[in-house]
Amino acid sequence: MEYETGMANRRSFREIFPVLATVALAVLLVLLLSFIDILTGEISFSIFYLLPIYLVTWRLGRWPGFAFSLFSAIAWLIADNIEDYTFTLAHYWNMLVRLAFFLLTVYLVSALKVTEQRRRSLEKIFYHDILNVAGSIRGFAELLQAHPDIDKKEIYHWLQAAAEQSIDQIETQRALAAAEHDELPIEPSILNSLEIIRQTVQFYQYHPAGKNRHIRIARDAEGITFTGDQVLINRILGNMVKNALEASRSGEPVTIGCRATDGGVEFSVHNSGAVPRDVRDRIFTRSVSTKGAGRGLGTYSIHVLSRYLKGKASFTSSEEEGTTFRVWFPGEYQKNG
Image (cartoon, rainbow, N blue to C red; front, side, top):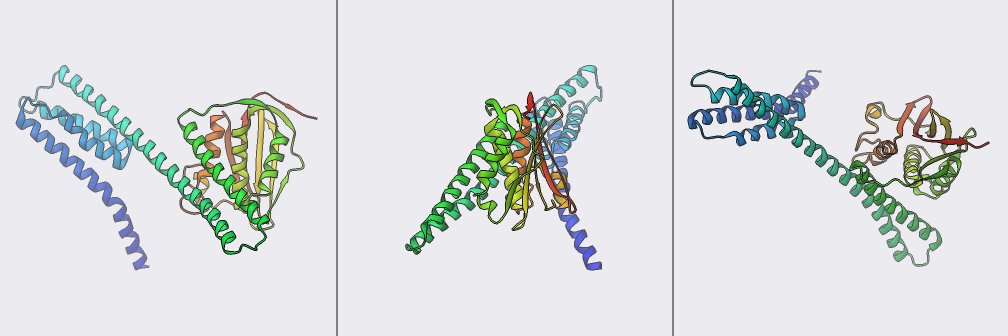
């Protein structure tokens, strides 16, 4: 028990030490700059105050950066007036201008960091998945080369499926990048919910993720005519089905349904497995996955693309009821039959 407590204390120290070191270094830099400001008199060192502000923002985040901007602005105000300690309205105005400049810098640096993290995260997921598919294609090619007398029909089928999966990964990456930059074109058309479901079932019956698993359409699925982008909706629903198949054991069914609700149409995909409790609150977050490190593009793309279409994604999960992912899309619709 004492050993576990000691290990926990060491882990806590390792986690908090970088934060304390960053704050201490930034404070020392501000104090040093203030001291140089006092010694040099009218020579401006304002640009150098951005160094500790940048350090704190990049290492600790936006709000610590805002707090340190205020600290730097006050330190600058004192250094400029340390000889007579007369603080006029003009001095306070100058401090507010500097503070505004610091805050703007913090905002831009934090936005840059978020963008860089998103780019690196998407690249990591993309490279992970595309390398897996490329490895499968190489394995099938080596099998054909090593066993020329093997029945090639099934191998060709899996090669085609792997090639289609690699294309799907590339298209998903491109669509996500465009959606995040609000550059993804939307091409609305008249769609039928049951036709979309049937196309999805037909495709994933022959997908590697669907091997030894049964995909079925819910008995109460409604045929709904509505307006939407077929390519993006197919991609969203395909990710939902693929995730459900990968989360299911051999022989378990995956059920796809749809219904009219809340002035729009809702698609649902159910499987009998449960999402681990430690990731449920972050399931739509970039890189969060139940399938191991370097994954998480599927649920994130469901969230991003459905939101891009003015819809919303949600899910429920429990050990007793299994997991159901839902996406809702707004717009004019008409129930058939």
